[in-house]
Image (spheres, rainbow, N blue to C red):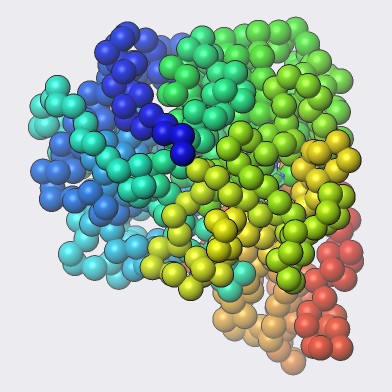
Length: 506
Ligand code: MLC
Ligand code: AMP
């Protein structure tokens, strides 16, 4: 099996060769972090973790705003061998409490604003704070740690590097344990596939609590020795303005639909850019074409997931086929199987996408049953995505075998929302569906049957969900119906509901 250089070793090599090489800049062009600081700060954080008694393998949970110290926290954990566990900054206190209970971390780092609303946390959990500007008790502790020139420890490539939660059709999220080998192999493969070099400047406008912004963007740019313009969040006008200083952008489809609304998006505005990458959700063929018409650039669409990082990509050279996710990346095996029997299907037939390669996770946290359910004996992972390989060998994602809504690149599991809605007073039952949305791709719609004689309003539902669900999961529309459509087996026909409400946001 090919061996890949650990991300931390790559940082050390680059820092030795050229410590002043910029790694992160802000929108104004100031250098926020060079490769020398990337190494020394990661080492300092690792030293602090050791001082606090955090052992390799312990979970370090962070629910913080995007900032340079937040990114360094990930790399400090990687240096030390702690398992980095980022949480969406939009999660409510009750959602966070669930993750803490499940993951049993040794350390929680949280924004000071959210610190006080967290309750029901174990007394043994150490809690530190870090805000979006880099201030907090974590930074105060770090200030006392001196710079060390110690080399990083040798890590087993199979050791866990991170744990990211993905939800399941049963409602409760599962922790995907991601080994170091998955990070280093995927980064090395993507540098090659997408031709990243030390001269690249990536606009980084994604959140850093998901694989796209945290691993795909960051690890790939580190592995290339390139740099990033590090933005707190995506703002289409700001990003357009930054194109002349950059070479590449990674984004979810919403980035591209929002950029397309700007009159300034012209071939001239993007003339220094060499590549626009899209993923995490389906990019409509019409968005691909509209972007090519306006800029002369064909967006490069790729397909990945938390458990596997990147699986396929449209080619850097060659045709980037709209509506497809390209070919399996080098080292990744991909097959289409019959969802019922698991037998491989011939080219052209629609079935379950299964993948195998060094990019795969190690398993679900403390959930061997679910891991066994999703892994075949021959090492293939069952993605839950339905697809086919077309006559030109491009992989096409046709739908999902899992009941999942992807809104602006965030995954939302209807079951979780239905459970919360069903608990609200006056609700008899509910069905949550995703319907087309011009900005987010899909939007959450709740279809609710009130209890007999009860009058409910949309505001009752949204207010009821306020403290239970992060904003991005809350319905963008609530519909009340006397009953839900069911088939003869009594199962709710979500397809019928999706058809009925398809035009809600048109
Ligand atoms: C924000 N809101 C969303 C939302 N983002 N609602 C649904 N879906 C989303 N994705 C809510 C806000 O809370 C707000 O609610 C309202 O919608 C409008 O917000 P906004 O200001 O327009 O949103 P913005 O902050 O601009 O964020 C939109 C976005 C962001 C698309 C830029 O969501 C984003 O960066 N998404 C990227 C997600 C990502 O990184 N996915 C990668 C997963 S990894 P209100 O009511 O308060 O006004 C993965 C694997 C792979 O999937 O293959 O990569
Ligand atoms: P996550 O669990 O957040 O990692 O999301 C992974 C899921 O996002 C995949 O299983 C797919 O359903 C979806 N996804 C990622 N990239 C694409 C893409 N390019 N086209 C369609 N769906 C995608």
